[in-house]
Length: 281
Image (cartoon, one colour):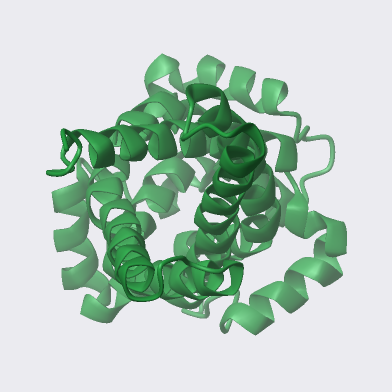
């Protein structure tokens, strides 16, 4: 939650860049600086923090679940086998990402809608007041299952992010510990955190792009949605923006993911050590 509060403005810019790419607006820059200036000019500083409550709620559910499940499974395998192989880390990451994303998808959907609302025509804006009012309106107006709209790319995004983030972080830490003869020094944690940020941002951005488009979509005048599902969204996005369009806004996404990953992983390591009942033994 601390990491999300720090990174929220970058996340908002990232979502807007993806929506500009989807709209294919000629003459509209996808430069993060230009997008940030536009948000500041039209919405003020508070525009960067739209949906902050849903972002914090998302971390309290999704991030807590995926990190907790990963640590629990990791510990169980380690106690059973004495070590956790790279393949086992990968499998554990994928399982934790899958389960965590299902828990966190409702708050993720609300966050995307908050961040994209100002980008929609005035008559299509939802104007949610807060995360709980948004949940209530979505259930009343669109049905309970809408809270899991875009869950397929959310699951794929979470699995790819977990694979790149947690597997990379633990594997690099272990290798650095062995080569330096140290144990999780601050330098080791920073290096591992940066590497995990690079890997997980590259793997997860295409799924994040599609997730954003599916979760923010509104029906046209005939009641038809622009995308039928994940494959259709991928296909139309590639036709409209090219394959590289799936990575549109990568510098912004990396700038959002890397520091977020470092803050999350360092905080997790600290809390894991602090609350370890055996740390004084």
